[in-house]
Image (cartoon, rainbow, N blue to C red; front, side, top):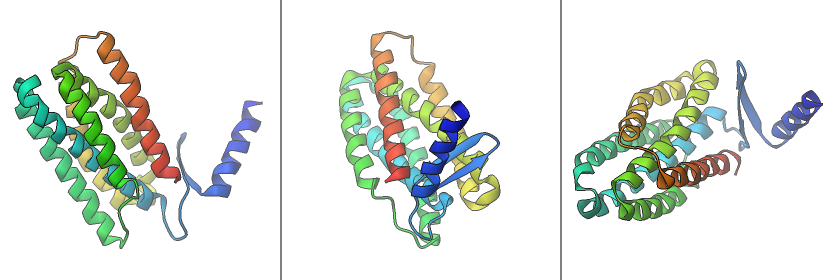
Length: 203
């Protein structure tokens, strides 16, 4: 029964677009004519990096009052995300592509998230980073597995950012001690991040 359901789902994927597969990892996407899976992943990741920059920038503005001890760390994270965004932008331009339609949406959502969590202070800022990076790191791992052979250029750029994203996760996780706020942000922000990626890949 499970096998039949899987085949049916795969059929839907292929009718609507394409999917990348490598050793048990599947990435589904609805692609435009002439667009590759690597093209779409680069554009979606680029939009996500822009959202991250906007989140951290808004958090920093409020952290001057709510979490002043985090300012140096937030500045470092912003610099990392700006570099990541530039890497994706350069490759997208080299391919003659335009940025993802979700780029401005990620900016708005990221700014709103940064405002709320920045107001809530240090624990909320750290929990937000952990929630986002938990999802992002899993997606980056899947992207590398699928693109390493089919699109080495895209895989190389994704590989360049993994260490920074892991560091953001680990340093932020070290500041957390659990509690209701962390649980809510982990579930809510994680689900929102998944949704944005899902929409970007299938729009």
